[in-house]
Length: 164
Image 1 (spheres, rainbow, N blue to C red):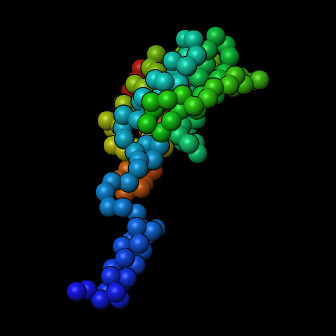
Image 2: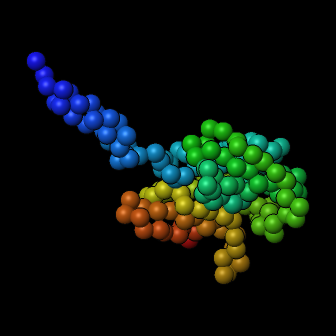
């Protein structure tokens, strides 16, 4: 026969274990760039959220990705879930960014620029945007974080797709 103290101690141990604040063993939930496919899916979802959408800026947000999309001369801010599966919100901005004009010179979209950058420098997307290099060339500036947490910036020529 078990003593009441032994049973009570066992119940208390199980109760404390169930209430533990320690994370469960197993893979952690990925961050915004936790999987190479996530930002690609998010970019595609954001572009598809508005007619003829062209992504020109991608940043991590509190609940996923914050993506700027050009559509028929207007700028839209589109929020997409971390896994890229769901558009969480979309709003048109009052004043379009001057970065939208750079898209007219781009032959390479955001997805292709990201994939090219990741071929050169493996890593998870931190952020990316279309911009102008010091020599005037329009480039995709792609910030990637490697497995050690070190951030690398890769510039991809927005017209040719070549890494600079």
